[in-house]
Amino acid sequence: MLDANLKQQLTQYLGMLREPIELVASLGDDAKSAETRDLLTQIDALSDKVSARFDGDDARRPSFLIRRAAEPDVQVRFAGVPMGHEFTSLVLALLWAGGHPPKVSDEVLQQIRDLDGDFNFEMYFSLSCHNCPDVVQALTLLALFNPRVKATLIEGGAFKDEVESRNVLAVPAVFLNGEFFVSGKTSIEELLAKLDTNAETRAAEQIAGKEPFEVLVIGGGPAGASAAIYTARKGFRTGVAAERFGGQVLDTMGIENFISVPYTEGPKLAAALEAHVHEYAIDVMNLQKAEKLIPARQAGGYHEVVFANGASLKTRALIISTGARWRNLGVPGEFEYRNRGVAYCPHCDGPLFKGKRVAVIGGGNSGVEAAIDLANIVGHVTLIEFDSKLRADQVLQDKLRSMPNVDVIVSAQTTEVTGDGERVNGLNYKDRESGAEQRVELEGVFVQIGLVPNTEWLKDSGLELTRFGEIVIDTHAATNLPGVFAAGDATTVPFKQIIIAMGEGSKAALSAFDYLIRNEAVEDIAQAA
Image 1 (cartoon, rainbow, N blue to C red):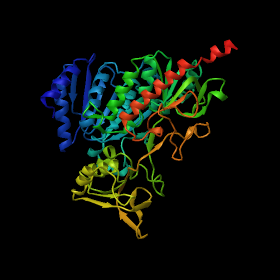
Image 2: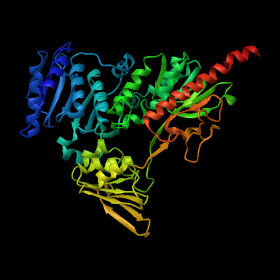
Image 3: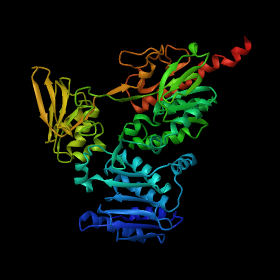
Image 4: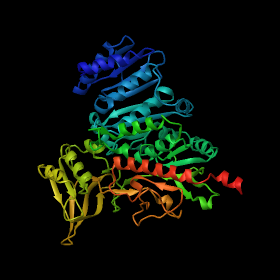
């Protein structure tokens, strides 16, 4: 089950255990149960602080508890074999159960301990899902640091009947006390914000008490992180307010065009960005959604940003880097069947459609790459493109057309996603050349049609936007409002790429620096008057 390299690594990790832990397995006679027995037996043999038992009586088989020997109520359960992307989650669960401290703030741990209520989580993941480990690890933290929280983490491939009966067509999918709770990549902070009814009030109070910044960055993706690092290095008091630190990078799987790094993955890059930001005295305020910009001419000399929780921040210079999100089709059925057959992440949700018929909407690089990935998993892929030809790189097109279980339809306008009330059963499209209505019977639709800038909150601010919602900037990343700069996918800069966003964020920061040294502070102006 574990090769020599994994055994060596795991032995080193298990040497960090501070107190004994127990592994209690509930097994059947199937192959997955045999794998689970083998895995737990090998872990048991690697540390004298681990003991494995195989007399569990849980209905889910195979499954196993990880619990503290001295506090058996402190436990988390894995159902299935947590390998692949989830092996790290397994290792962390062993360490945390054994008393090794997690790498989260004391504030987060205290918030977990203070949760008032009984919470029973069931979470479904797939071994190929790059978004799932964060959610698995967040629920593990909750369960191991609050005995009133129970968490069962279920590998969907091992419990297909259960996945089908609960209509789980997108992972990660979390149920709380038997009811659907949340899907998609979710951090421990986001989960706590949903569970802790006082979290938003406390966050608003903390923000309201902050002094004006010299530079405030709105957005925590590659552009925002770069901007914050550059202004902090210039010695300016810098703050970053982000709806989700890491931004869309968190939802990106393979990254192969980040120069000097042949391959990395979005979550790894996002973690590296956050670690780099924390090397400086930058005030990071996560889970803060901007709702309104009040320019300096209306806000007493400072630019003011108002957030969804009612709090606001003021700043001399503002850098907006709120990025973009996946574009929706905007057709009937898309919203109704989201996570019930309509999906946006082929890496995460593709395994749930194994052997089934699916469609990919979009003929750019993202769409063609998604179709290629899915063709190796599902029964059949139909790629549908609005234009008269695919727009992806030729090498990707050649690969796609070489696959025997793929059909490509061009000049096709998707008009409706259909379903039976529970899940997707097809889509309708119009042939743009003949005008004829056509139908494709299928069980999944993956939407890959580009990006929409996250700039709706700026529409009444006086900031110039294009008809597509992009922030208009000049060659120095300056907007039409003095002291307001912008960078990354939310702007008119061509080519929405991670490495370009980083450069644009750095440019915006240097422009903000130039602006600040050439303009007096608001307080200085007031004193001179």
